[in-house]
Amino acid sequence: MEIQQTEQAGVCVLAPVGRIDSTTARDAETALLPRFDDGKPIVVDFAGLTYISSAGLRVLLMAAKRSKASGIGLALSGMSPQVQDVFKLSGFAKLFEIYDDTAAAVAALSG
Image 1 (cartoon, rainbow, N blue to C red):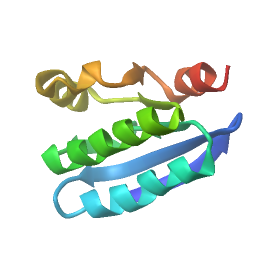
Image 2 (image 1 turned 30 degrees about the vertical axis):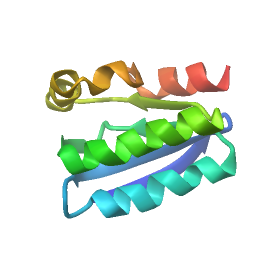
Image 3 (image 1 turned 120 degrees about the vertical axis):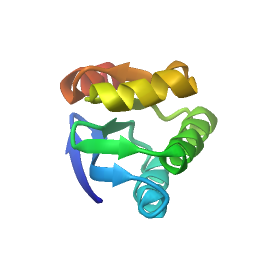
């Protein structure tokens, strides 16, 4: 897994490519959680993500808690139907603002 980082309209966009599973969850955690210290809203763009396991969901749960505690916005975008199913079945879809694409998520967090 690779995680690309860009900034759009003052929003940090992290785009994992590949899979977030027990092998790569630590890398995802290391890339995502410190971004809350920057004070900018964060979008995680799932367009390049093919799979997420419970280990990946745990990282996102930690990010949601950090977002709530810090007041820094967090949104998810670009989920494939398979990843959407994981979020719906696990109940995680209710924990996050989820957008069809990154542009919509960035607009929501930067406005």
